[in-house]
Image (cartoon, rainbow, N blue to C red):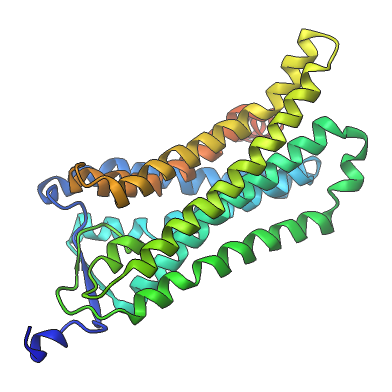
Length: 315
């Protein structure tokens, strides 16, 4: 390849995001569910934050972790969805190289942060069920703050190599990203270099962080179930296990689409590109939309406060 062509896209000033490749004609229609889901996610998570802030009885460890999850959901979805909608509505496909790498960092950092918060919530359920008498002395405000800081630092530090590795590769073929946002693999696949370091690190991150989180959650629930089965009556077992249902639903809402999306991006070469991109894009909206619905419906304190707010407004 001639030198002139080789240097055209080396550290390009802009990338071009295609949206959902192969479904450009349907972008307007695709934007309707995307916009609806994003609106629900924003309103739902802000409502959770508002209720917890205003209600003193909710100022406890479980609800602090829930607020962390709500903030993470808001940042993760807001870092991508407005740009997606601008592509769908206005065909605004350009994104600067630096903005693309920043978006990459936010997407992967905050999705990992969500996983870490779910581990913290599993620990909260473990202490509440297995050591209820020590709950208030174990999960104090300083301890909750330290757990939150550890989750932020872990995801922030382990995600840093993504943009740094992506920046060092030469992009001499094209600057067109066949995706709706700047995902790590979608960007580095454009490089005209051996990107095995980026690919291997991405897999390591996926299986190390998510694998470790799933392991700790599994251990927590094994201990929780053991404690539940020791309870004397069936009603007590069901009532105690019911406090874990919302957390288990939140875990499913995050991990199932995350694992499916990550594996199809790397190994699903037989899956049509438009379907892979659509799944990856939906993944960024599903957990932020579902989490406030799950907790709003399942946690009676939040549900009661919501009913009270709407009742007051009507009267």
